[in-house]
Length: 516
Image (cartoon, rainbow, N blue to C red; front, side, top):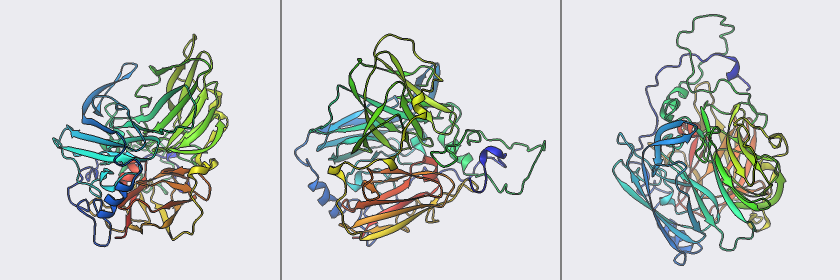
């Protein structure tokens, strides 16, 4: 880090936070129709584009109910956690559609303490008023109430869903959403959906307690010098990551939060989830990072992975040993299974911890929970090394508008923001990033901070540079730059934010708004 190394100093003055979080979204704001001059979430342009989506009126109708409620979860190995979950499990039950189908999902809010919630359908290009972002695109769903999300899912891919209220993402409220391609070009024998998560809730504290501590920042410690054996009286960190090894791949500090567990499909490494397959079978892995503060380096011991998709879109196939997956990113890979028992390891990048699952195709002893296959140190795939497949690469076009997206703030005061302005949930229309339907838009991410940020754009996919992969979430390294392109073809108001749940909640979020 340029100014301060968290692992070499003491944390000063951590007490109780007074302000709390932004979790209590109100029913005010732009949800009713948007500010003057902007296309509202339920405007006529939104309805028009929805009618034009592929499959509208011809696909199947899928009706589901998702009940958000308190749950006591068994994470394996004798570990239980009191948390919130959909229908008493985490990950929630997989939702699977075919491209062109319509999803009708009723959210039933049974959360305690009058807690409001929502569902954001992460990565899906859908109509704006179904995006699930209170108060920008809808009013929050109050405790004891219901809300039905209804939209056409017209783009095949690996997605997931989670709340977009406060730091509820860091509880158990998430589940995979798979949109199958009716003309699937890949050939494989089996499929395995792998959901990764960093876990604190109901074990060492709650996400709201984590955020309360982080909001204190690190204080001004540049001139504290060697404090020796000074009695620091209460200077301790329950949740802030002060250890860890850092990460060269991420350019330094790996994250803000120390998690007691890292899960693969809801299980701790001591009692892992097991995928049973057959030797020689080709398996498609759909890997989702549903974590809030952790990038994972993922490898399958004894195997190489062929990367086929990222964030739902196909790429030119590449064979690698391991993947680096930031929060909100998804990767699809193909692997031909060997004979035996093999560890799928999700190493928590730079945190000296990780998650584990097993692949069993034959006899053999399961590896230890601390196994670290050599593939983790082999050829590691990051998005910058991928190229979009020909059929999804953006056509060459003149850029109509360029916006600089400066990522600002830091750990000192925990004042994360975009262009120096923290997002105001009470006024989501303030300081919008303005675009118009039909434009080719360029976003130049400029990271002025000493932390990495996985930047997620709702309602669209962008292309990394001129020929990179199509994605909706991409890592911007510390003091680094990243340029992305997208076509403004989905009117409304869309969040652009860091998918570190705590950075986004602190203010690293902006409204990408279409002019009326």
